[in-house]
Length: 246
Length: 246
Image (cartoon, rainbow over all chains, first blue to last red):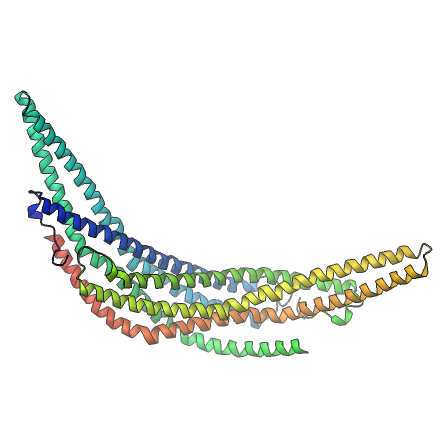
């Protein structure tokens, strides 16, 4: 339905079938938005959980390598070259796990926080307002019903006044809640765009920082280290291969 | 125990208490190695699983964004700016998920494959050889026992020859299996170093490629894209804020 982007607050008092039908469209749109966000939220939660797990597993690997020299190997305990090589690996892998931890924190703040807020605050507000609106409509209906039954009987003035007062206040209450509900539904049309873009921006910026951190600070020193190790491992493999062959 | 790095194959025939005690040291070292590798294997498996999950979740997020325009939102279906922005996000996040997928593959080949091979082939071989050695020792003991009981009784020549033949073949078999077992235990001392360094090298090289791929090909175009989006989102937030205030 192109062209419609607002529920008319000025028509809430009239409560016409047209307005009710338009409300239906907004409610349908909100349900679709809610369902779409729920899927996106789950996907982002998976990214965030996996990132945390990656960070933790990387840290654990680094710690295991650090602990190598504390292992009680009855043989080869004097292998200092091996020990120091593993210490170096432990150090660079620990640096990498720090980069991962920074990424995790950024994802928590810039991706999970805004999408969670939208889920738990904005979309939840709509659900609650719908309920409140429903209750106030029911109350109004009850009051009107009581009033219509009243006119057929002979009642005293006090009761009559009470019932009319009730119709008036419940009508006022219903009007207030429908205005609040409409305003929130209108606002959601703006909020949902921001709620989509904000976590995505947060995600991308966190990724860019991660790549920058990784490539600027770490890769050059890693590469030098790896070239040295690589050569010594290849020598070892060749030596090993010769032993196997003989 | 510095200085000892080989079980003497030439002493396997003698099977002295000294050799048996040295075998004990090698077996203890193998058990310690096995336990250490088991921990490292689990940590690396966690890294690999988390990386796969990250890759899958990133791909899913990209797909959800791609599917945005297929969603049946009753309102705002004509919002082309939003649709095309999300398409661009979907594209860059998909590129990122490809980088993650490449990293996953490299981790599978260069980290998980060698450490799994060591676990399932080399360490397992030792376990099997120990069992085979145990069986052949038991067989030999049985044959010797039978022979020692034989000499006290009067047996016919045929049985005597049979028993002696049995002692001879079981002794030969036992000698073969202990040589094989010793050779494998010696070889493990070399293999375990390679088995430690190879997956670590694979891991680091995969990470370096990942950072290179990410920073060289992707971040510049991402940054341009994000600057544009960022400005438009900030405008939207301000607009949104003004609406909320009025």
